[in-house]
Image (cartoon, rainbow, N blue to C red; front, side, top):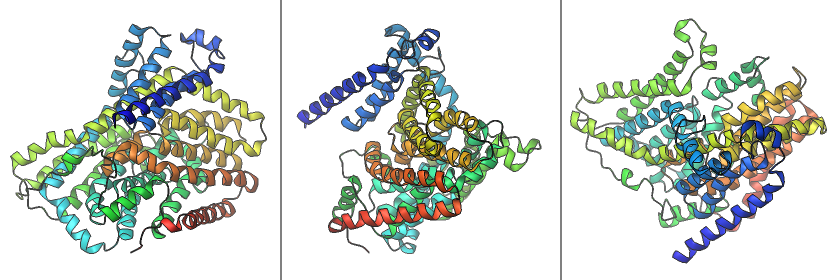
Length: 546
């Protein structure tokens, strides 16, 4: 075992060196800009090395904390031209916009939301609400297929925000999927494949608000709605997930996880059990199904109210405009705190939990969220340092250079660039925030090709986000499913790349046909056929159907 770990680290170091050498050809391409920014590596290929180092290390070593930290350190050294003292200050203080202190302060609403959600989950578990729901669902949901489809259906209902979606669906459905011997990796995939794809095609969601907020000169929300039928990656991810579930098909590393779960009863496959201690907490209250369902409904309602409140709904703004202008982090924080207070009123007077038991859940919920908070903090810091190095400027330059290419190829080119940028930075919001202000002005206003290209940008951002181990949404899906993070990334990657390949082909066709009534059915059929072909290839390894 020790030899394997040593070889993994040696391999990781070798790969990082190769990446660094490969990028060296662009090291001084942006020398003029670098002089202005202070870093010799500003807006060059080197700006993408830190996230690539973190991603490669994570995939090779299967250890995400140290991998992210190494990527952050590399980025800090690059930004300060290898000045150790300045790099330390850049990384850990608020001396720059990319420092850890700045990132924590800027995302404090999300962190509070995570902690409160962890507390609510701990309360529902201790009160016995989760156990009661599990007993009810076990009787109502008879098959594995039913459990997976129910998980998907709940994800569709919780369309407001992807963070909220991942954690809520995971906490509610985990006892049900465990009963039907569904691996944690498969649960994490269903959660992740529902959360962002549903949010990016829902006009009333934090994602729609974010898109509308970065598009200038046109009606952002109207453009978002028109782009939905062309958002192939999001739509085809849902189609692929449903087809895989209905046909009982799995492939790649996921097949090993599912085989282990069904045949051996091992839901994890690997030795990593990051949430085992919290999962073993026994209920002490006399809760019923309503003690899980009602807090979840209250949480959804309060979060929606919190979001439109921050958007000015109660100051006269329309519901749609309030969503478009909302501060989703603050809204989720306010909504979750309100839901916690209401849950207190729901539990204590009915003696579902005693006051002391209720208070004990506060540190329990916080402890359950520590892994997610730590990974998110590192991922945000890495993204911040990457931004300081001008990765967005470098990628924007690549996109500007594509204007001379045949116009019909622009959607697929933008799709691929968005995938790469989201994969390297771990943020889909940051990706379309960078690319949309570039894409919209270079296309003809009001044209169908503009709508297709905007959709390709959003689709690529979600795809890269799905593939990246440093993505906050991917981290939330792992947390919601209580699955080892690297297991989730490695099992989801073949599925995401398959959908991405089908989507890329359909963006070429969309640019030629430019009619979603024709393009969307072609895309859906091509995705279903692809899954069926994969099923045929893996037929001999197929698991027994129910």
